[in-house]
Length: 384
Image (tube, rainbow, N blue to C red; front, side):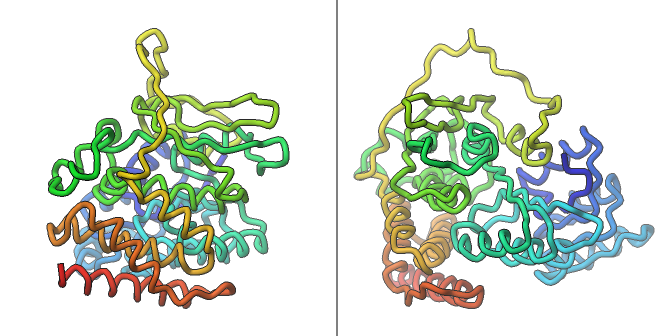
């Protein structure tokens, strides 16, 4: 079990739950970071009394520094400040719940410093999975998945890597806000409609990704890196009830599944307590109240994002990084009402085709591919 933690992205939905879990189990939090929410970060800092806190926003950091002037807490800013928190000596584990590619550099910095990683930032593995895995192996660092689906797979495998006994990994998906609709019905959907997820309460970016099914496609790429399996051994099933979080099928036909409440809290907690299990404040499943459990094939003709992601990881190199960046930009532009819902996956795929690929790439190559893909999507959005 983790005793000393740095929490990156502590004011988001994942980070706030992680902070609650730390309070429950007495986990010491030595550093906290956020993007702009200095008010909640102040409350967290006063409770945990960390050595350092950091905000990506310079203005927010200035405000927080004034508010915490009566304490000994050091207030940092920018990506440099976040990375400084990520390598803090007192912490042996870093939980990264930063949204987007912004989480990659702090993850690599933390691994370089020998920290174990509880990873809720899937973009880290999508864009830089090869770099992250290589460095983690060199530094003998463990990576614990925080996403409910990958946590479920991790639990079914008892924390071990798949071997010849594993036939396939089965990721489950709720289907998002538009499950059951056809492509023609999605041409004019609104932002509020796309943000109306039937089961999960999440941030806006990931909720839109869920609606396009891009989130599940990115999870396929992440699973390839986390579990060292080929993309062809990862299947996806639509499971509208979101009770079965994912499954593993073995070569003899046995299937192990991890079930739980519709909440990310248990996966977050397990990433901090594995291999031990501790009491939680989440209610157990009440099986007699479950009236229906369904598993359906995804509609890849309507929601083509998963196929796009599969193509990216099959090509390898910088293609996943470009795809991830393009999707982040297109997702944001949709939320700004500048492109249509269907434009998200279309522009993401087009941007991926502009990738100048490198098999042996560096962090600078990833960041360059990221920048080029974002610029392409922005330029194309202006034309539409």
